[in-house]
Image 1: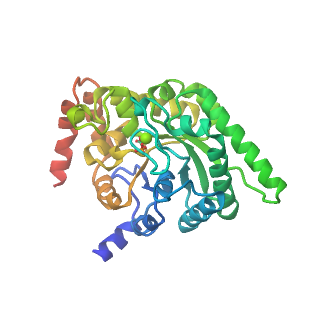
Image 2: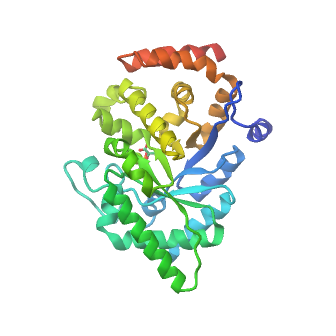
Length: 324
Ligand code: PEP
Ligand code: MG
């Protein structure tokens, strides 16, 4: 098994008609670095910084965070690591900071929470920047953006933090700044957000939840939660087309990137960077290496006419069955 993994690690995720797909990994634990690198992850597409916060028993200090981040950046260096600022709220709670709301997914989540607790965000960004000064491979990713002023506010905090560190004698190369597209308003405002960002990462879990108004964790409506809903297809195509026309690099980092049927659709749409759990990389790489994008295009064409996610799945599923 190790031999096979090793052989596959050095082979590119490339379709039979030479479409190269970048496979990055989702993580939040330093312990994931080894499985990620062993499986040939070409970077970290999503570092969920709330995970180290969850295993602490109080908010970690700047120095504690710096130590965590520098180890993650070092482990992957020189590959890029997209570190997301704290994304708590919704289903993600810190044991030492309870948030009680009747609509947690529509409430104090992600960037809304951290912009209201600026000191937390400043501390986190300082820790990330200090790690970046040492390793140089940080990309800063901002969750739950739904308004233009949010990304402007983050950039101001970033600039101020860089200046303050510079005054202390730490010279920081400017990291790329990106935002998650998880909220439909961010998708619709992309042309206005674009001038403030360097890249975009689609969070298909939350984008599905917010686009379809279906709780991603409620078993009563789990039959309605599907990343391949026809409205998601429209959204995913619109995001890709807009990003292309704006020259913005775009990747996708939700669970969808681990779902073989969905990956076929994503490749057809034109997504060329996916971020997924390290353990799913070999499976998805093998799939990519077994298909021709040209063969998927007519299926995408048909999918555009579907009114139901089961019809879309039924179009792409036979490709998998044929591969065995
Ligand atoms: C997403 O929403 O798709 C995502 C990747 O972020 P998270 O699952 O951490 O909310
Ligand atoms: Mg999310």
